[in-house]
Image 1 (cartoon, rainbow, N blue to C red):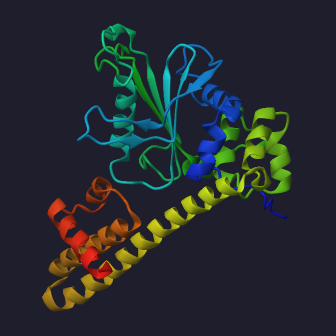
Image 2 (tube, rainbow, N blue to C red; image 1 turned 90 degrees about the vertical axis):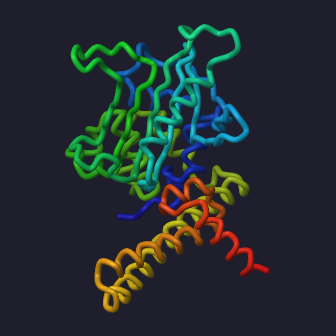
Length: 313
């Protein structure tokens, strides 16, 4: 069975935005949202307007955030759409932050609160975001604990675990619903074989167009360059984390022999986190992400920055 080599990876940040975040492919986005969020939508989406994915802070001292795709439909409902490859610490909190940021950004001077529109957060995750849940699709709303009423209805969250979808899928490709075809496309889009490709597309023009958007020859040199840079960034981060973790384990074992297992493991963890932070600083990762990922203090981060500067000079 020969593999189709011409398709790029739709889970790549650059590719994901090209497929779901451009005017040219907005029919793909609309069809996907209608299929995945059909139970949450008051009515099918007919058109979307793309908004800036850069969520500006309310004050200069606050954090700027960037989402993969941000858009709104004809009724003003906003959709925050993310493709998440790794289980970064605090992702669930970040999801709520992004949704709240989109919600409050609607508020203009003199506007009434009752005019604020709904915000739906949708994330496709290439990792088990909720390990204890059996189903791959997890939908979250705010309800009254006693009555089950959905009075606070402006924010909702949907998470799709692509790994769990693939592991629990019992249907043959030809029996997949349109919604499930999008999940299959995201998980297998770059490695699908020719026979499965024909079966998956079937009569679905939008799925066919999604694959067309993934074809390497349809990308400009600049787009391919950004795609490769994103691949390199992800690989470098994974390599740095893996290397630092391995080094930390080895140091922890060595220290454990001399100082006791518990003390050695703790020291190994600290050295591992410092090594991770050092590599992430070199890659240009922001301070807050590094602190959240490693547990280091800002003071320690300052020391590491000074070390890096001294080594460069």
